[in-house]
Amino acid sequence: MRTLIWIWFIFINVVGYLVMSEDKRRARNRRERVPERTLFILAAIGGSLGVLIAMYRKRHKTRHLSFRMGIPVLLVINVALYTYFLK
Image (tube, rainbow, N blue to C red):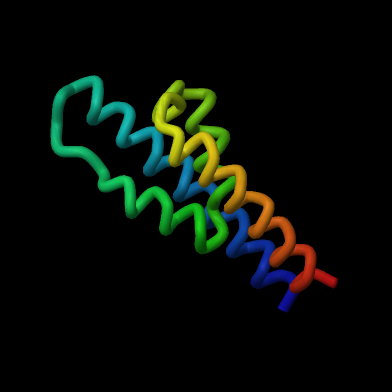
């Protein structure tokens, strides 16, 4: 069970990082964007660390209060859940 949780943690955070990075690329190229809801869902299902890292490394969505507050809150919730399930 622990191995599956670790695999999920790594997978969903890599996906979160890549999707956030892709949205930044699309924003620069003025193409169709990834919905903000999708980014929040990825963060909520365990990928908040990847989304947060991409947010600050790519300087993307850092002006949006919903992202500056929401993603760290989801990170705290993710940490609590991962800690609980990895005990």
